[in-house]
Image (tube, rainbow, N blue to C red):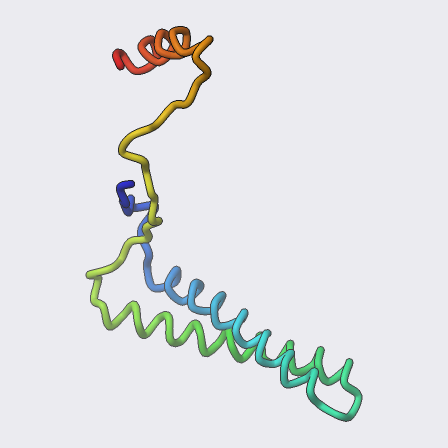
Amino acid sequence: MVTASPRVGNVNHGGAALRGAGSGALAGLLIGWLFGVFTWFTPVLAAFTLAVYGLVFGAVIGAIFGLVAHALQRGRRDFASVRVMTPTRYEVVADAEVADEATTLLAKMTGGV
């Protein structure tokens, strides 16, 4: 297996803030919901309210941290990439009755076996 990281796009200040807001909102929502679940008074309303407050607060803090982290890198990492694993070789398993046909088909597809 070979690992590659092709570029999928550029990241500017707005994109970095948006990605930070997304991750911060998710974390804030989870923490706010957990605090709301463990309250003793009106737990359903408190869970929903604290989850919404956590979502908003997490999004704001995440956006700030994402923007600051992007600005501190000064353009050294201003692209987005995705890690991809590709195989270096394949193994084909075929029954003995169809092995010759499989070899012929593979030879046609790849230009040789």
